[in-house]
Length: 185
Image 1 (tube, rainbow, N blue to C red):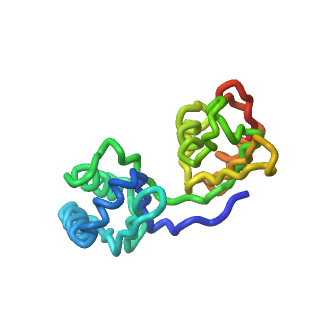
Image 2 (tube, rainbow, N blue to C red):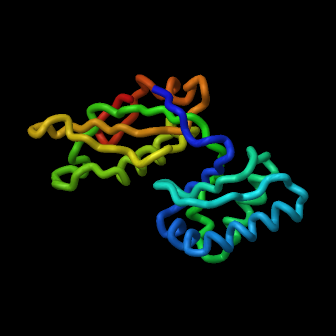
C-alpha cells in the first residue's frame, strides 16, 4: 500500500545516527551557512529549518528544490567537517511511502544462536541483496514473531516510492535468499 510522505519542500539526507547527533548540535549555524551558499549562487531557495528523522536529517525549504539546490546542500553537508561523509547517503526529495512485508524469515537467523532478528539485521540483508538496489528505506523495519512457539517472523518495512507504486510492485512476490532460506516479499 502507498501512503503520503513529507512535502516536496523537504530534502531528506539519510545518514548514520552519530552523524545526525553531530550535525544537529549546530543546526542553526548549518542553516545560516547553507542559506549563504544558496544566495551566493542566486538561488531562490532558502532553508527554513532542519530536524532529525529516524533515518537521517530533513532540511525544510521555502520552495521545492531544484537539482542545483540539492547539489549545494549535499556539498555543504558532506564537507561540514564535523561528520563522517562516508556515512551520508545520497540526498533526495521525498516521495510516497509504500509498505511491504517479508514473510517466513527466521526469527533466529544466526544458526544455533538465540540472537533474535533485529531491524539492523534486516537493513543489512536489504543492502546486500540486488533486488533492493533501487530501494531506499523510509523507516526502520519492524520484526514480528509469527507466534510464540514459532521460529519464523514477519518483517514490515517502508520504502520511498513513486506515485504509481512501481518500486513496491517490482518487489512484490519476489524471492531472495537469506542464508539457506528462501524468503518471499
